[in-house]
Image (cartoon, rainbow, N blue to C red):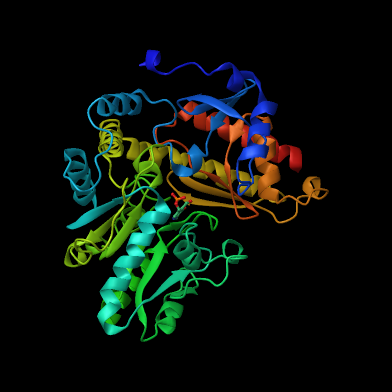
Length: 427
Ligand SMILES: Cc1ncc(COP(=O)(O)O)c(C=O)c1O
C-alpha cells in the first residue's frame, strides 16, 4: 500500500519555522501545542519534520488504535472513496447499517446514531435525555466532578471542571456535578427535575480514574428506582482500550450481577475511526425510537467512507485479537509503572488505569521543575519528547499512556525504559 502514501513535501520535511509561522499568522491559538511539527508516521512511531522519531504512546489522544499509516485503514479509505464518500442521511447506505449492527452486537439490543466527534455524540445523548423527560418537565443531567464530555456549549456545561467553563458564561443550564464513585452523593443530588446521570467508565482527562464495579451497579439500580437514564461516555475509554469493547464490560467482568448491566445510552468516537473522524451513540432498545424523524441530524454523520473505515478497524481488531493485547500488554505496562511508583516515590506518586488507558501520577513538586511555571505533567512530557517518546498530560500531575492497540512488547519496553530514565534524572 506504500505507493498510495505520498512522501512528505519539502515544506513539511524541513521547515519547522515556516510551519510555526503559518500557525502563528493563520490558526486560532486555542490549543497549547508542543514545539513539534509532525510529518508522517508508521505503526507506533511518528516522525517530525527534522526527521526525529517518536514512540507514540499517546495515540493522538486515544484515537490511533491501529497506529499510523495502517494498510487496512488506507485500503478502506481508498477502496470506499472510489465508490461513495458521502450522500447525506436522506438515503440509506450499507456501510452505516452494517456498522450500527456491529456496535449493537457488541453492546446489547438497541440502535445507533452516527455523528462526527465525541462532543457531538454526547450532545445527542443530552438531547435523548431531554426528550425522555420532556413531558414531565424533567431535564437535569448529573455528571461527575473531574469528568470531561467535550467542548461544545452543552459539553462544557456537562464537564465537571471549571477550567473549561471559564470565560464562556452564562453556562447552559441543566447540568450539575456529583463526586465520582460516590453513590450516596448521587442519590442525594437527585431533584424532581433530574432526568439522567452521565459518567465516564474511566475518567480520562480527569486523570485516568476507573469507576468501581459497585458504583456502576449502584448507579444502575438508582437510575431504575428514580426513572433516570444512565448514560456513559465511552469516547476515550471505549473501543477495546480497556481489553473489552466498552470499559463497563471490563470493570464488571466476573462481578456478580455485572453480566446483566447495560447503560441506557453510550457515546463513542476517537478509536472508532482510528483517526478518521466518526462518532456515535448507542441507545438501549426501550429508548431507541425516542429520537424520531426530524428530531436529530448531522450532515456528515455516518458517511459511507467513515463507516467503511470503522468496519475495517473492527475486523482487524477482532482478527488480530488486539483487545487481548490491550489487556495483557497493558497489564504488564501497568505493573512496570507501579514498580516505578514504588522505586521512585519522590517523583512518582501512583500508577493506575485499565488495559491501554494508563496514568502515571507525578508528585506535585519536583525540584528540577521548580523554576518553570509549567505543570509537572507538561515538563515531564517535554523531557519525554526529547527522548523520543510521546505521552499525553492529564490535568497538572498525570501523564497518560493511550497507545495503539497493536503496540508491540518491545515498543512497550522501550517506552518504559525511557520513562524510567527521565524519572531517574529527576530523583
Ligand atoms: C471522555 C470524553 N468525552 C468527550 C470528548 C470529546 O470528544 P471530541 O474531542 O471528539 O469532541 C473527549 C475528548 O477528549 C473525551 O475524552
